[in-house]
Length: 546
Image (cartoon, rainbow, N blue to C red):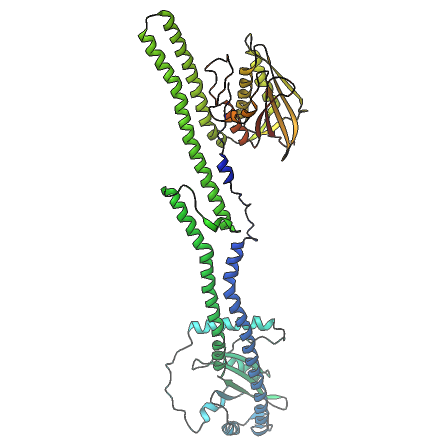
């Protein structure tokens, strides 16, 4: 009996089957969201702190500028009264301006200059003091590139942030030199700016014109360096935000390490244990229960190792079965040879010769089928699936059987009426041809002399869509009900009485099932209810038309 099997997963492997999740979208990835949130947390804290403190600083600076503008307007009006003359032409009286500035008391951080229409300094509060401040002068140096760069960054941020301020405050003016401010003031404008003074201090400066009637007779410049205190206070206020941001970065880094790095290390160690032989399967504990990419990876690795373990065991069983199946005919041949050498009766020697010839045929068939089975999987992986006309393929194969039939062979018929011309499947023509040949050979071996093997193809509905159903029926003794699944086991053979020895290896149906399953189909055996004989059914997904 030519029943064979396919290499299939054991019941234990079915119970261990792991469901692999579909690949996750990057947008909805839990780990991607965690990494993004972790990286943004500290940045958000700093931005919020900078926005809050920048608003406070901008308000303070703006208020200071407005205060200086009011002060400059007041001093300018007084200078107009006490230090200007209109005869013979409007002009500034320099001694009167210096005397007036000398009487004004301001904080040490404030400096006032009076310039004439030629942009020359007429009076400077730093030069009019009766007492000279005694302090060690710092080294003469220009502000460094870092300080200037920082000022530019702050100015740009302030201009941007204040430009979108809900209060609609004006942006900070571009930094100008004292000469530029004075020139604008002498043209009648009131200008404000931030810059570094000659001692490297950050200052706020306001320049206003001194007018007599409608003529500009000079310019007044007020500078204050208390902006440094404002910035220092701002930096001190920003320090808690920086500390919180650093703490958040440490916490998120620890979280990422616990959530990502440690599980990946656990996966690596478990894989190394399998690689070195310390364990047969991955022991991942709770990792496979995670609902993120690491959980998907753990499930995939677990399924992969289970599949590899089952395949290794299947190969080991296959090797043992091959050795056993090869040993039987070899033992028979050895016994026949020894017997023929020990006896001189020609009739006995002839019988031993027939035994040897029969076992050689059996060995040849067995080795051929083993070779085909071993080579089958590699060929299926290498070959690409194409559109195959299963109706044409059946017609070609059945025609060959008809043309090469011998007297007494079972008659083979083909019925394609149920397919209605739609006979295409996506697959590989060579392996599909082998399926048809193995099923037909199997049916012929069980059919009585001059019997009939019916091959039919029709359309049918499957759980995943339309299928093409191939049936091969014989008129043999049928299959015992308890053997309908067992016949697909490797090297299984239950030949009926009188069947020719050596024609079957027990691998034919195993090859059929393996090919069918790689084509996403299924195959099963049943007995014909209306007559004696067996029926083998193959369902293959139908190819889409067009």
